Length: 521
Image (cartoon, rainbow, N blue to C red; front, side, top):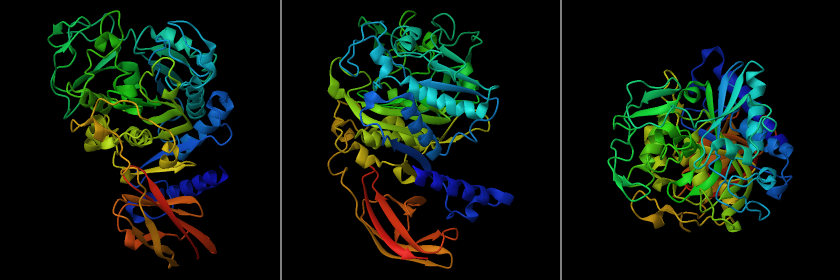
């Protein structure tokens, strides 16, 4: 961990120096820095080195992972400040289906079970991850700041789901309030465009939406309604919870899960479905599920909806609970322990799209075939607040994963093979990564030399290589996503002496190979 901390110090000082005296960013693109170069996003991936059995994590061990993941992703400084209001959006989908939790215990409908609070379960966000994030936030916003947990479950009463998995102000001591979205919007909406919008709801218009038409679909009893989705006008107008939208920052805290319908359910879907007020988008006045009024199939526009809603209200930061991943998601079959995948990791990023692309590669889903990832990649930036646009980078050549674990190494040996019923080309099989797509690239350092304050590299890489990350003495230094044969890096701050140069070549599916050389400066 020491080398990561040292690397961060070096990087932050160089970023500060590059911004001093109003220097143009492109004057010193090669200086050591986090890859915030205008074309790249960071995703951190940290796996525990002290706890091997995920059921034995303590709050302290989880907080170590969360702290390091947040720091490696660039930290929360610049996103929030003293006195801010910050909303934390976990994934508490539901706890009423008698699933098998760690240790084989099944939770009965609506009942409290200590097993759900004692170990990461991979289905809902572990409360200890939320508390660790909240403590990081509190350190910046101070006592005058306000931290709110907001969620609406997919089934049942959200307050009860909170209680079942340990979401209370004793456990979440860094949080001011734990709220639900269940009652936002007042009485259940029957008019898609009411003359008077409730004070706790905002109507936000998205420019150039990809979801443009309503649709017909059978209700619970097989009766056709016209249309089921009554709260969409086809013009890009979406309703959001005012308190969530107006917060100074929104932090998505999802679980790493495969989703049989959406392909993936992570940072983006956690907001695009989970943050929709059920009084507006719910199935009925008594059912807060959003799988009927919001499209839930590819053909009806599920992925277009997800991309649009996230574009309206994106996450400013993401911390992903990957202590246990879930296959066959979002809800694993009760008693099927094989659906729980022990990842023992935490991911973080300022870019919700980038982290979901990384997650897609971890769970062996072809990100190119997941519609909402494609639509957001094409949009390139998200957010509807004036003066606040967030980067959305979905091309792996513009994503760098920092941490003590590579994506390819994490997924190796973890058999994500749950069914998927989505695929942009209509072929479900291509949505799964093939053996060929998981193959490693080739890389060779043909030559390397320090000269005139620069490191000059000649890299020979295979055709499947999309990018190369350069490390000096095992500290990340620069992304190279072109001109592999003539790579020039500003090395003026590197001390003299023998230096280890490592080139990690990556494919679009984050398989990698490495080559190292030691040269003198």
